[in-house]
Structures are given as structure tokens and as C-alpha cells.
Length: 301
Image (cartoon, rainbow, N blue to C red; front, side):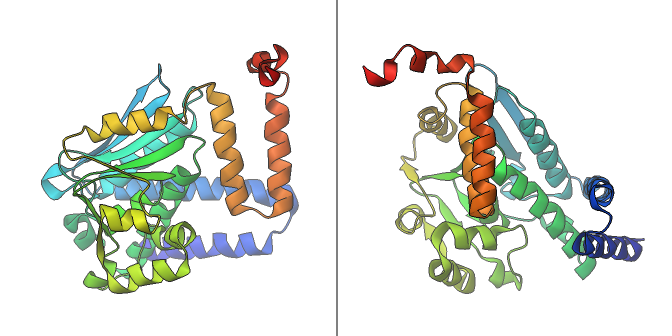
């Protein structure tokens, strides 16, 4: 079955490259893509254990995604991947959302892939499918029109470090550690973290981390731009992340989402496409009620 499914994915990629028949094919490929992602979610949801829990605070517009598998240092099972997919989908449609905190239950952030899940999908094809599925989820989280912060306590290693790079910012407790340790188990980054790491800290620093497997403390992570803030051990990291986010999430949700959208598009597109997107975002806000302070001449007082 999965051999046929792998060929099905290759055919989708070939058709995408050919780009034939205009909008009809684009729509059909979009449909095939959605079908593929749904099939992947259904497949990986079979590998049970743990959960990913979403809590949205409508008053503040800040949500919390909790990686919840504490007995295994919040290692990601297939079910947790499916749960994370659902959480991101819900946040993508959250009209009043402004920010999101990604964190782990109890004493750890995330230790990467769950061993029981890994052993059940231990073939090159299943590895590729899992990688494709997690690429989709983490990049949607990365580009979601909410300001995101990874609140890291304990360990963020392997896939956990990759998940941390799917957020706009990273806050670490003083004793927490982060490391791309994939090489120690004979692997490379599989959830998009390698690509995001290069863009985050630069080619040279990223190569050093990926090729050495070195685990960094919070101060070292901050010194190379991998961490943005360090908090004291006795603090509630989610509470501190909320406080930290509030400085960026004060105001109208659509305005904040627009700022994130502009930045996300500029990071991925060429100049012309990014400027076109920025014009569209600007024109959608122009003339809205939130321009009241401008009309009241607040800007020039």
C-alpha cells in the first residue's frame, strides 16, 4: 500500500513541476495535496501515546500549545503529530488570535521522536512520509499569522530543537539545554529544523551545531541568536512567556496578524511578490475603525 502511496506522491510532484492546464490543474493539485495530508494524518494518528493540547485565551488572544508526554520527556508520537496538526489548523482560523506559546509538560520541552513510534515506521519510505508530514505542520506553524514563542525548560533536543525553530522567538530557563543531536543516532534533521536553523543563526553556526551534535546551555544559545530571552529557574515559564508576548500582542488582532503575515511573506518570497502582498495587507486595513487614533491626530501630538 505505502509503495503505491509513495508513487502517488511522486506523481503529484511531477505534475506540480509541469504545471499544465492552468487553474484547473492548480485546483486539482491543491485537492490532491489536501488529500495527501489527510491520509498522512490518518496514518500517523495510529501510533498512540501522549497528546498535544491547545488552550486559547480569547481575552488576551494568546494560545498555549502543550506537548504532553512527560514520562518520555514529551517525545513526539504519531498521535501527537496528528494533534499538533489539528492545533495548527485551529489557530490558522482563529480570527481573534495574536500570539501562541509552544511548551512542554512538566520538566522538559521535547526530546524529539518517540522511540515506539520510530521503531514502528523504521523504513525509508515511512521516514520520508513522516518528514513530509512534519515539514508541513512545522512550516504552517512557522508562518501562522500569530506571533509565536517556544517556552523551553529542561531539554529541547533532536526534533525538540527543530520544533523550537518553528517559532518566531525562543525563551529558555537558565538551566535548560537545546541541541541538534540527530547525528548521534545516525540521522539528519527531518522536521525542517536544519533549513530554519541556517536562516536563524547563519550557515557557519548552523553547520557547527548540526555536524557536532553539541548541546548548548541557555547562555550559549542566546549568544548565537538561537535564544531570545533567559528567565530564572523559579519562574513559571508559560506566565513569563505570556508577559513577554504581551509587549508584541497589544492591540487589534488583525493588525498584529498583518504584521506577522508581511514578515513571513518577505522571508519566503522575492521582492516583487512580497511588496504585492504588503500592498494587499495594507489596503485591507486602510479605512478600518482602528485608524481612529490617526484620525484623532494622535500621531502628531
